[in-house]
Image 1: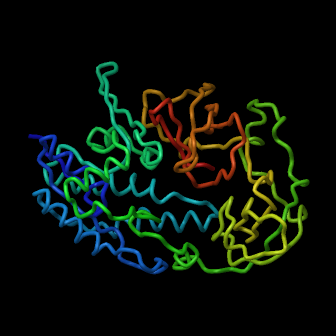
Image 2: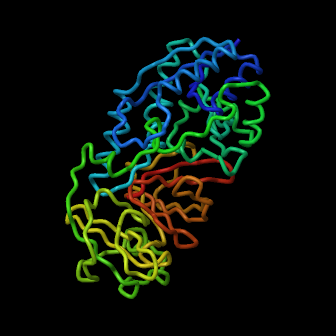
Amino acid sequence: MKKVVIGLSGGVDSSVAAYLLKEQGYDVTALFMINWHDRTGTLTGQCTWEDDAMIAEMVAKKLDMPFHIVDLSKDYKKRVIDYMFDEYSKGRTPNPDVLCNREIKFDIFLDECMKFGADYVATGHYCRKDSFSKDDKEIHQLLAGVDNNKDQSYFLCQLNQEQLSKSLFPIGHLEKPDVRRIAAEQDLPTATRKDSQGICFVGKVDLPTFLQQQLEPKTGNVIEVPARFMAKKKNVEKTPDNFRKLCFAYPYKPWNGEVIGEHRGAHFYTVGQRKGLNIGGYEKPLFVIGTDVTRNIIYVGEGAEHPGLYRPGLFISNEETHWIREDLKMNVGETRQYDVRIRYRQPLEKATLYQQEEGIYMLFDDEQRGITSGQFAAWYNGDELIGSGVIS
């Protein structure tokens, strides 16, 4: 009998995943991980890890599974939270959920699971895995979940073949209502629990308050850039000589606009942000179209269609490029078309990837709104996630 250790979080998804594994005849052990103790900046009314652990243990007892707790908070702080603070300090916007899966759930936590003699590690992610042989080598595929509204493959875009070889995703073939139904039919304690929100394992936070634990507020200017000052890029020819023009942010200059207010620190803001500016008197809402943490300036534009919110492409350096399918890695000079996602739940967008000496230039068929440095772009071939990288 194959042994599986499941990350039991106290939520309905991992609970049903555990039940399905038991039904399939696996020897299942539940392992709950503690990743965060500090509640600074956490919004009131959020469940604590103690609540989650108690409910997870109730699920394990209901399903007759051994239950254990492991504290990974030191690793989580070092490998996720500290990285997050560092990225914000540089004016980039990291994705802690992707980092949590890469650095914790499928790395440190996976190692902990192996200590229990596990053949596999299971989670409640809405995604699927498949495998096939190629050149006498087993290739593992990460596939989107059947439920388009809940597909979480994007959050796993940094996994590698070794991690996938040991992973199981028992609910990837189900839609969320089916998961709720199964939980109710089995009278699981999590059947009616709300889904978690906010930063992975930290919860829903007031981001500026949370970031001020390490990043000092610093008053700076808010500069409005009128749309007429934005250079048009739609007619720029898509050649290697023009890749940098097409794939990097617009060059904002302080003389391209006027100061209309002050902010508390450029590192607290991100491209596309609307809330938190607290500047009135405009017919349409103001949006952040660029930040400069060196000079502590925020650039804003009026209206959701402001050209500063849109870019034709993006760039990912070789150091930040990751191929789940290493056998499909592109060669220098190669061009390939994929469907691309630059944020969770964003519809897939068609793009052409150009592999150059320094990295991948990615040009979209249609300009994309809110391309943000520090976020992850993931590229798909149909349902399969092929690779990903951090946007420069």
